[in-house]
Image: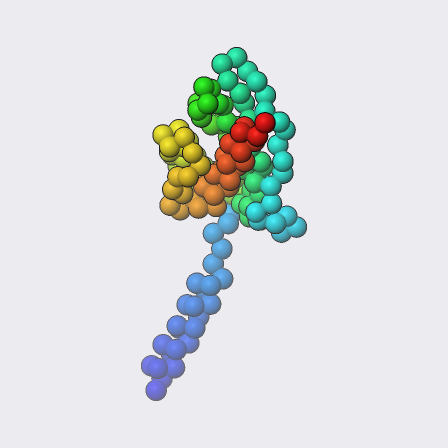
Length: 141
């Protein structure tokens, strides 16, 4: 009976520890902003050989992600990051892994319809949402 009681208490303590574990190393972004909110970007800018279009700034619990897309000849020529997650050290590691991979996939697919990067889902979704808003803005007369 003592062993059962010990194992039951140990299991409960383990579950409490598991469910209260936080992966964040720093302060969380204030929850006053909705996770999927976006700020409109300015209208497209024409440059030599193409157009620069800023996507929406997409807010997540880990920070803000925003991209700038260069269009040339009706195609996505480049995608650069204007803002990225910087809330904690883990975000910085994910940025180094996910952002170049997403850029490569987008340039290959010429679309925001690409897979998210495993382990960086929030970053990927925010990146792709910002990208899609830039694509939509570029095709708006």
